[in-house]
Image 1 (cartoon, helix red, strand yellow):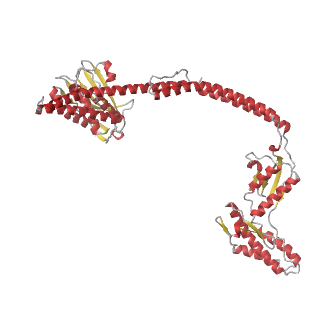
Image 2: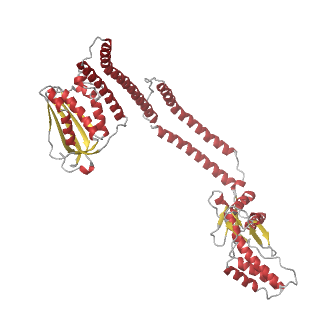
Image 3: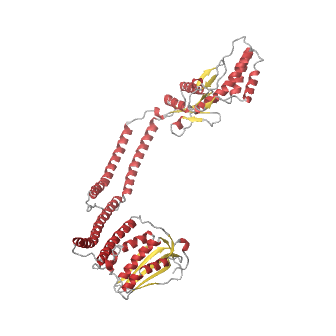
Length: 560
């Protein structure tokens, strides 16, 4: 069974057990002990009414009343819901606590009207004219300052409150300022002023006693659309936190679930930590240079696959280390003998034993150039394998590549008595790549073919466009280098592209090259999105095929 499936099964078992135990305990305790209250205590009603009025009177708005409702719920244990007449403004203590609001209790809601009422007037015998002016000023000041207070509340600033001569609250910023937190005391519009004047003027023609009632009514009518609006508050069921629940069953169930989880964790850790410890020890050994370290890799789960992946990584590291040692040995072998010869001749000339004739100097120069070629080839191969070889790509005709290679190797072929020919192709075969690098790759193949072909043999270069799969569209260009040389045994073909490998171990660099041409050629072709294939038969010859993708805009139907 998969390790992931085992983990999921174990966790599901613990989750189901915990859920069942919790449901049983909750049902048992709720059925026996919990009973919501449907009637609010009168003192709670008075407290809620007083606190909410104080908030509205202090701030001039209902903004921030959520904190008051939450505090009242915690202090009274009541579920509280307040809303305006339209139902658009609603605050519910259940929602504030993150619960789904419950239905309200059976008790009817009660009204909370925080709007101020003008109540302190000039004494008896005073003319109604000052009363009218006081009413007008109270209306204008209240309408402007209550909007200022609402702006301050939205900015998180608590306003200062004063009472005018009619006991109406007047709001200002901290320190009595008329600007604070981006808010400014608004100016009463001309229409509002005219309304206030009209409302207060009606009270100027009545007696003092009637004028007081008229002023109160005028103030209420002219300020009904500003300030905190009346709310209806409902007190529902008691909050569940106020009940006591027997703790012993809960503790026992919790201990049982915890014990099951601990047991499952122990079993899981035993199955996981043992192979993890083995992997840790093996990785530490690899870091210290012990490339022979491996870990047991049994089972078909993820842990077993991790062990097998680690072993494959260790095998790859060991193989890379072995390749590096072999490469260093090959380079030392390739350079030791010719450099020794150069040193010997130079020391002999320095000691006067050998005369530095032009022929000898030319031979030494040729030997130095051969060593330079090996170093250049190594550098090209290192850059190519690291992806750092620079390419200047363009669209070009593959036929031109073959013609250039044939011209470059014509003298070598003629000197070896080998016929070098290019099979003509009637139409252009376009490829996309770096012309110089592709010529370098093909030149390595053509040079090898000429060197491995006996006098009287033949090397043929050809190009063809072809399609892949079942489509008839040209998608590839195939460039072939065919020779009639001695061929390569089948058991040596897998090593053909290894560094410094030669089919004939006794062949020297004069006839066998540096042993780096084929690896460089394959890397260049790979970087162009192509591939190099080889077929060979001993006594018949060898065929190298370089396949390159054709640019999309150059693809046609009817591939050959």
